[in-house]
Length: 138
Image 1 (cartoon, helix red, strand yellow):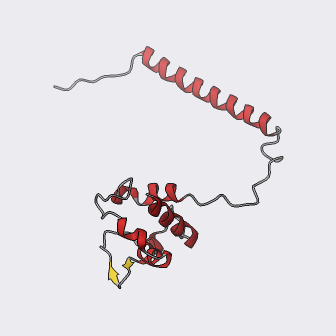
Image 2 (cartoon, rainbow, N blue to C red; image 1 turned 30 degrees about the horizontal axis):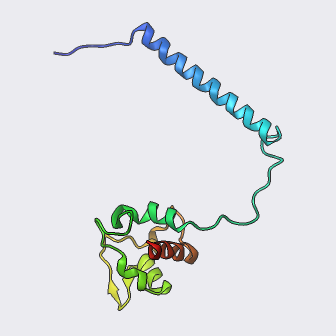
Image 3 (cartoon, rainbow, N blue to C red; image 1 turned 90 degrees about the horizontal axis):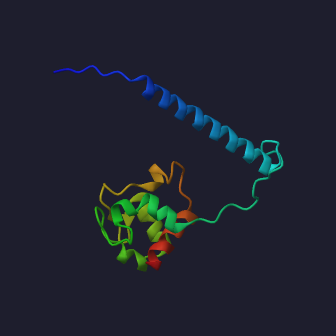
């Protein structure tokens, strides 16, 4: 049994009203933002000269927690308690290239972040060290 269902005029009118309101709110918000920034589309604003500090917790949450657990307790991947005692250079080797201390190769499931990157960009030593510092603090 096939039922052809078309939209009623009321449903179409409701959808169009929603779209018009969404556009109006967006344009209003944009204009308010221009007024706050000086009204020139950001020409009066300058970029910060100092880079934002690296957040190890955020990097861990977005790249590691899915497998190693929110508190590094383990899940799909192993718990990371043993890595707390590793030197930063050893931790970097494991994260970037899948080589744990003692020339032990990590599971192929473990991403080689030196190849895949963090958030689409090549990871820095500072980022990996920040992740390690976060894990040590858990």
